[in-house]
Image (cartoon, rainbow, N blue to C red):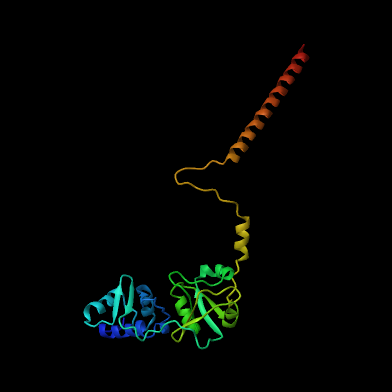
Length: 249
């Protein structure tokens, strides 16, 4: 581990992230200027030389520095001075493409229903920089799915974009037909075949067993059939004995 920065150095970096350029790091503060501490820590751990920062280091800045540039409220953190903090605004111009990422498990739903805000956010967050979009995506999933928003298509479908800072753009949602996405991964043929051919499994209860009524009926039918065969054989034996007795007479 490299040498750690002083609380003063950390305070200056936090002031830049939270009070000046959160968009540069893929962060969008709420209406009060707060971001989630866990989201900020993910950003810090992506930055070279700042991976050691934990919540305790943030609390140390607030507790030790007389004019700390940050303040914390439960699970949230914000800059004290927010005059230079960008605000969402109508963009003067839009890039042709924007990028966003979703969790891998949401891939199918996105293809069917479009892109909606991630949990806790009021807008879909997009970046003009593909690398930044992937960076944001890795904060929510180890293998995120990157989506490419076709801005012209989206605008034709009524999507209204807002720009946040220099690198981020916001929208309430992106409908199907306004973005490109990779196809769903194909299932392996053997896996699909096994799933079709595999017999249904019976539920197992620890320490007990389950009774299948069809098994009971089948076993009862087999017992009845065996009984009938025994009765027929017994009749045949009696008839044979009678015939022998007549022969002796």
